[in-house]
Length: 227
Figure 1 (cartoon, rainbow, N blue to C red):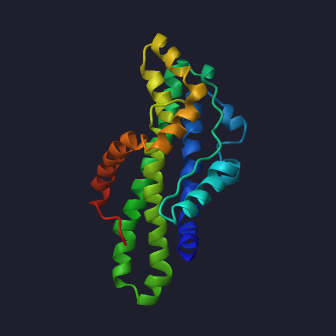
Figure 2 (figure 1 turned 90 degrees about the vertical axis):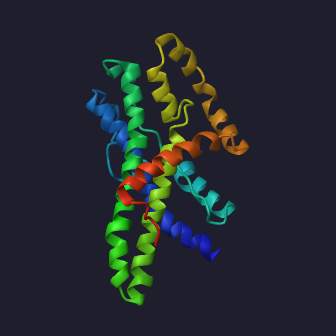
Figure 3 (figure 1 turned 30 degrees about the horizontal axis):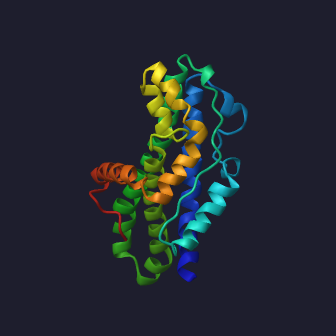
């Protein structure tokens, strides 16, 4: 139980930051393209309370931590409202807005990895045992969780099934007729995604994407994200 509580304490802030920035990125990029829906509804804010979903941001991460004995955590926030008909090109605009979420999560993972590798680790090398134990290790644990949570959130959302971001991006790339047919999957999207997760089939997409994202991360951190 202590390990689960420790994992919750290390994961809580990174999850809130990851899902908050993910949703803000969607709304802000939509705003830049002419859609003021998210801004008008007060969703372009760093206040995590505006983005928290009781199930996806609270219950799901806690349940996963308990069920996996602290080894795995994942969550999501309330989707930012976007009206694609405010874009000059609705399908293209929606695809660009969708891609913004995973991109910001990759950037957050890189920032966390850089802080861990080039700031915290050098400081930890000269810190006293007490400072290392009470300050450096918890901060390092949070940064490491931030790396993995953001990479996983990016990879998961890139699964090309609507309404996930990858589905939006794919719909924007397909010809209009094929995109219209593909978008009809959205009504079944949640069920499809759940089946992919529970059968383990999602890993056939997530694992290769994670390897690519880790390669990008390693370019900035030289592979060093441990403490």
